Length: 371
Image 1 (cartoon, rainbow, N blue to C red):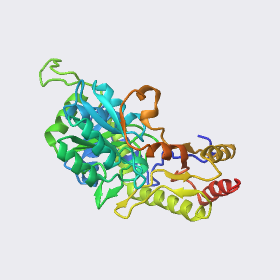
Image 2 (image 1 turned 90 degrees about the horizontal axis):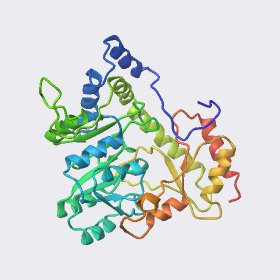
Image 3 (image 1 turned 60 degrees about the vertical axis):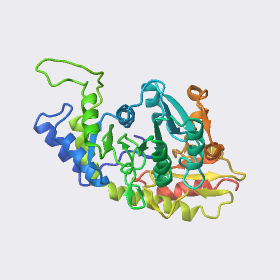
Image 4 (image 1 turned 180 degrees about the vertical axis):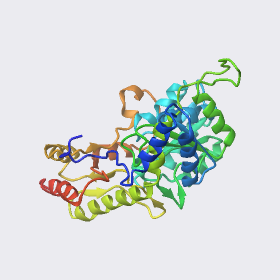
């Protein structure tokens, strides 16, 4: 990695080397293949942290979403509502199941799924089988309102909490409040296992079934027998060891991410046309990425180009799914709030390894623009 570059967000191993201890144990026992003690304990420890009954450690957050949809009974021709303002991994598993995605707008208050737009979508598609809500950038969606709508229509609600591990909504962890929750441990997330994901639920039978599907759906027989279609989706014991070590410093990472947000909010407060991503009093966001919105003379491209010239990594907001070439023929409900967020938004460097001088450099570079 470029030591002089300020990164958007990158892996941050614990100072105590918790991760190495668990990985060493796997090597010492020659248990480096999928499954093993680290996998089982990572599932148990993650479930205990978020306050849910059961968890399945998988190869990615995308795999977890795929199996959540399969466990929800989603199949060919079913309608699935999905938040439009998100990364493509939220939507792609719908296609894996040969289902039909319909995209839902966000609201200004949360930057996440709009309950009003969701109600509008159900009025047109009352038969919709499932809803995927995303806790974008670690900001909690208004789960109570969304869950009430889904319960009324009998739809399964899946929380894509890939970016929001450590975020709470009214005291409850995101990912733990609905039928299924999904987390990601990709290298850029608030904690990482170098890769991997987790599917969680209070339905133990469904989680057991997803573990079965994730291990190639091998029947309990003395020979290799398969009565269902399976997948190679289980997390390795080595990666799970990294995840276990990272979980020990998760709360510290949340504090660091929130401190980064607070620093930017204070230092950039006087710039005309700049506002911070919305925080709500009923949530404790993990602030995985700190994002800003620009509505004045300075545009996102100006900020991105100026930062890049100083070897500082920043990114645009996710481009909405219904604007993506692959999904442009899909139905969409809302008032284009997410397009406004996308067009005006910038993700600022939010790396927990940044020093104060790094943060000051980011701020000074932004302030150097002609506001």
